[in-house]
Length: 501
Image (tube, rainbow, N blue to C red):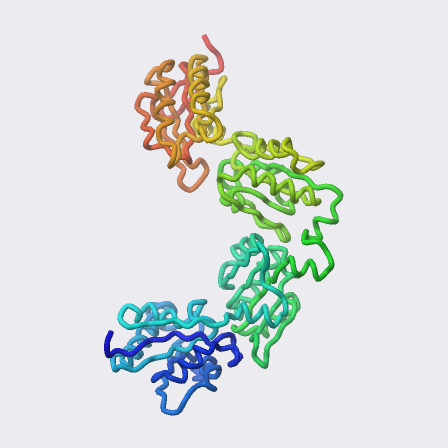
């Protein structure tokens, strides 16, 4: 790169020129070329912030956006027009860099935090030496002028663009303690709706042009939507700090008004809302907190004021403890499970933690759901029409020797089997072993239903035989139903007669 100019993406901070870093000020004063974006009216906020540090004789490249809204006559639409603009802007800057001139691209806030500079960086950094100088973000500035910390201790901060759909915004706002929502302007109504849906509208603040002379701070719920510019954001600061300001414990006040909490373990059924029972729907709507595995929590309709606590797949005990602790403070908590919560799911996990001493005095109720076995059976007929056994092939919580012994006993008893958790990425041999055990007692022609993602978008139901079943085609999203000696399969319909002759 000898002889070429250097490219600098310089963060200017939130607007007050005195909040610019010393390095940013020095580079602006030393640069051969100063580039900045502006709207078609020609005024540039970035240039006005940097103006105290400019010097005579510098070249200026004004990069004027061709459109300011998502309506344009460009054949590629708004995205096409903007892409062409960035390509042209990069070429203009490349001419200076090729001539050996150092170029500073001014960027409000931080260049890599929703900054306009990043589009120049991705087009030029592979050909020229390019360095980013970070700046104070608008989020930090908003917290500063509000006089409240963003987060503390183990609180979670979520940064969101206001352009997300309101339901998605509401879901993410409900899942976090603190948040900042940027890019208001025309999205203000959408953001207000999401804050209300998440039950956090009364805790949110509106901050406009933080650190500018014309800055504005007020409760978000009081803001006139017609008065909102693009350079504004919604802020949910540290809830723990707000709680201490009110001389209250860090537990939300809603929980303290209850005389006794409750944990309701709710079965969601195997797939979408069509499998949810009316009782389950009522319990989910009444809950103040929803606790569960992330994908299952995502299936629960969002309700205003409801807090959501999503976690990973292998932390059932921790999930149960969290739910019981919330309930011990007076809250009504719904713990969600796919299918039925009493079938290899969270009902046992919660009751195990109660037995271990957690959630003393907390009431626990179980609300049933349609099981995966029932759902899979319904797709092919009635394979569970007579006595059957439900067995998990997962050896994560019990030894394989026990599973094999139970398979052998169920096979000898001529029971239909519903096999849960048949395989996973780390359990690849158990199903083949299970088939060998069952073939000791069943004919190779015994019908086997392989049901994948029942009720979901990738539903696939196949009827094979015990002898031809390929374990490699089965994964964790499958449930298997292995017929008895009496089970019949004809023209895709599988059923087990109710009487033995």
